[in-house]
Each structure stands twice: as structure tokens, then as C-alpha cells.
Image (cartoon, rainbow, N blue to C red; front, side, top):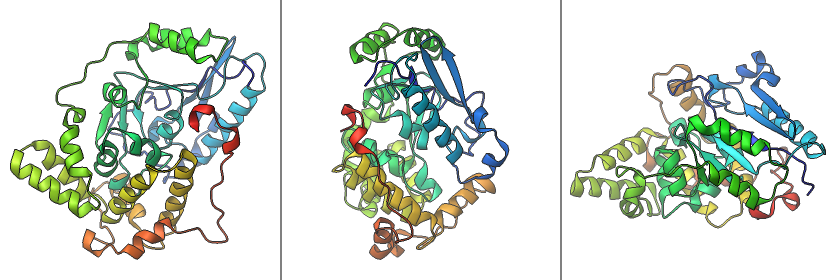
Length: 359
């Protein structure tokens, strides 16, 4: 690998650029965005003498990737790979400054170095949308401590930057106000040697202290409730915990589970559990299969209903089909994991050329 590649594979992969949490149009199920946005504005580039930074700039959709943005990123990375005047290779450093979810998380989290800030919010809200955590989520969520991944996937609860450091989703923490200094320092590097990058990031890192109310302080009860084999058993465990402890956290978790698509909950739990024993490329291939089967409406229109309820009409009153856990059959769930038809090829990835730390 030549030492002249790309300063950051992704800078501020989910920077809000002036947007706020009240903007919920976060999924690329809204294809009309691509009709009006110039792709060069959606993925901008900052250049220095020896570096380039790709910046996602689609705040109206919380920087959700669409096909045009993904294609532009691919073209940029390939051009930087062959440019002898550019610093180091793609996906060494990702800066997550803002909302980190979906494909943005999928791009950033496989990076060797993942910098978070006091503005970072990590979330997997897919079950509330009638979908499932994708873009590699079943790989990285299943490797979190205990059953924290199941909890995050099923409830859609959020983690902040400090919590991401604590559970090793991120490697370095810095205040948002110091990012410019960090980026300037990285931009001056002319090597992709991990120890050099590590030293540079460590120089500008800030100490982190976990809040006592953090979900990471409740890992014992999370494991007790979310280690079960079925959603019904998880709900039963939460209800027992709520009755015994009167903990508001249990009540909130139960509310989130009962608001989510029953089918999505079961599919997502199975996906996370399978992800524990699969490589990243295997997880991506399975998630791709689940996504296409979901979008095809072969079993249910829950994804479309979730988009309608949360992003279009915003009545937040989805009519799930099936409407309850007991009406979700094994055949329905199996359909989501079944091989694609002969007219839709399975996802194949160039795994032979991946970075060593991704094996």
C-alpha cells in the first residue's frame, strides 16, 4: 500500500451542518432528494497540500447516503488512491461529529481510528421504522459488551460520544471546539503508520467521564433482560424488572419495544444474534438480503408504513402488519433471511483487498 492516499476517508461523517434533531427525514426512502440536490454539493471535498477530506453535506436528511453520494465517494477514494501527492489511505480516520446512524455509521465504524465529540449522537432507530439495523450494524452491535447491542438495536436508544468510547465503538474523544486543530494536525501527516496517527490523535484527546445515569452503568440489568432468545421473553423480563425495581429505564425500554414493528423486532434480534458468529462481509451480505426482502413487500409493508408514519405524515401512529408479536410466524421471519431470486444477485464484496484490521 503506497503511503500517499487520503487524509480522512470521512470527515465529520455525520456532521449536522446546521440541522437539528427535530429533522427526522433520515432515511434514503425519500428518493426525491436526489432529484434536486447536486451530488457535488452533497459530498464536498476539502483539500490541503498532502491531504483530502470527504465531507457528507446533506443535513436535510441527516446525511443519509443515497446512490449518487455513494458513487461519488467511490470515485473520490479511487482517484486519491492513485494520486502520489496525497497523504494516507481511506478509512484510517473517521470523525463522527453529530448524528451517527445508518450508512454514515456503516462507513465510519470500520475505520481504524474513530474520533467522537461532545456533539456525537449514535442511534439505530430502524425497528421504529419497520426496518432492521443494516450497513454492518449486526456486526458491530453484536460485538458490544454483553447484550448492549441487542438493547440498542431493539429500542433505538442513543449513545453519546463518551459512551461510544466506553463501549469501544470509538477510539478517541475530543471536544467539538478542538476539531479544527485535530484536523489540521492530521492533514500535515504524510504517512499512514498507525502509531503516528495514534500519537497525533492522543495529543489532542480529552478525558472522558461516564455519567452515572448512562445505560453503560446498567449493563447487568441489560444483560438480564436482553439475553433471552425471543422478544416475548425480553418483554417479560423487562416487565418483571420494572415491577421489582420501579426503574424508569425499564418503563421507557418497554414503551419503545411496544411502539416498534413486531416483525422488525424479531428479524432484528435474529440478525444481531447471527452477526455474533459472522465476519463483516457476511453480515453485510445478510443485511442486504434482509433489506431487499423487506422492500419487496413479500411479507409485509412495515418499512413503507414506518416511513409514512414518521417521515411523511408524521402522525407517529404506524399500523404494523402483523400488528402483534404472536401473529408473526416463523415462515415470515425466515422469508427475510431466504436467498434472493435468480433475478436479484446476492451481495458480493471484494474481501481479498480489505484492510488487515477488517479480517
